[in-house]
Amino acid sequence: MKNLHITIDVIDKVGDAAFKLVTDYAMKLPHCHYADIRAEASEHKSAVAIRGEPYSGGADGQAAFGVRVIAGKKIKATGYCGYWMGMEDIRHIEKRLKEGIDNAYWRAMAAAEWKYEAKKKLEVLGKSLWDTTLAPVEICQEKVVEPVKVHPRDVTPKQVFDKAVEISRAVQNLDSSITFNELLISCQLVREFFASSEGAKIEYIHAQTFGFPYIVAQQPGHSSEAQYDHMGDLRGWEVIEGDNVFGVSLKDHALDLGRDTVELSKAEVAPFTDKEQVIVTNPHYNCLKVHEIVGHPLEADRILKMETGYAGRSWFYLSPDNNMFGKRVASPLVNVYADPTIMGYGHYKYDAEGVKAKRVTLIEKGILKAAMNSRETAEILGQEPNGSMRAQDPMWVPLIRMTNVFFGKGDRDPQDIISEVDDGWYLENQRVPSISESRENFRISAKKTWRIKNGKMVKLYRGGGMSADSYDYLMSIDALGNDFKLYPVPNCGKGVPMQAMRVGNGGPTMRGRGKISGGKK
Image 1 (cartoon, one colour):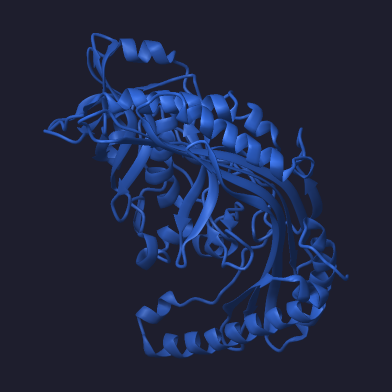
Image 2 (tube, rainbow, N blue to C red):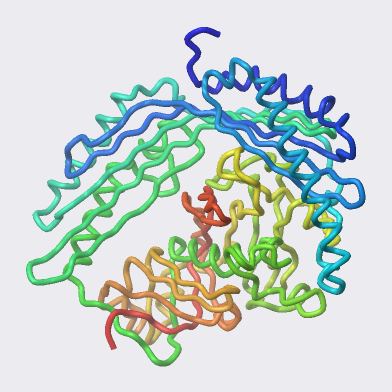
């Protein structure tokens, strides 16, 4: 393999060695109960332009693998080990994989010994240290290749670079008040592999293409206004040309965002309201709302307090005897789903444990039904695994992560929902969240805040948003639109070290009650 370059083709060699080692070598280690290996290789091309001028870009590839082992004599525990791979590692891949298994195994054995001793000493608290057991799942062997229209390998680095410069230059020339803009484009091809000691062997090949415009505008004597948005999908270059949730090319999307930024730079800052108001929110805004107040608190590791020290707990679940499962948590109009099987940024067919993806109803007609789980947490909670474990890269420890999580579609015309509001507000497109520790209340800013009077949007503000108690807000929903959309979220953060994961979130237009949070009283 002289002059080896990192491409997704390295998985051919990694996969064969990994399956053999994880099913044979690992299970011969004393007191080893389970092992799996995740590997990934990617090829990517990217470019950045600033103020219409080229800034950076290029083409590259990378590869990594991660090992999980469950082992222990008196009690079982988990050990992990992960590696980035260079060309030399790939030349000696069997040796590197075996080193990874050995390191994960000894970490698991050490953790099991510590867990057993701590369980004896901690008495009542020791009951929280359980034997690590995975709920049973269907063992699958499959290769999944997602279709694309314009394959990433057919896109040249120059094409990516030229497109970034073209769009950034068009935005910069849009209006004299635009003081800064940055445009990022990335087009990549990803190949993932999973093998377990239970016999699972899964490959997944997909493209991922996105564009990210960031624009700043300022009027004389006023503060600047900055806007940004993410356009992406698990598809090829066709995403940049218009095959995306926005239905327009990246260039048109960036120009629309530029016009909005200029318009908002002239707008008055939104006020605060002391009392609850009628608030209508559009699908893009509801993308972040469902993400923060439903998605994260229905990840089972938060429910079981595993994430308490890192990212908080869940307002849905205080304890096994005091939780909201089976109870009303929202208006009867509200349904929430987690569905990685549909196309979106949270799409996949198998998770990082080789569990087949499935549609999960989290909230049904306002009643809390389920949480996203792992095989381990499913066993603890007495649930069926639903395939919600993922990692940013295979060298990182998998965590329970949102997939495509969204509010279900309604049957109302969005304009009719607005027209029924005599005095209220309309929030358009999400911006920045601020969420309490257990997600029991929230404050989420909007890109545009509109005043509604007599059923019409009469005045545009900037710097506004909504604050509310999560339960009270969800219970207040009295109208849902028929305009469902699922948006890409590229940077869902969780864990220590922080892992940024792609997810899909969205919903229809919604009407409820909350307080308007702005920049002035």
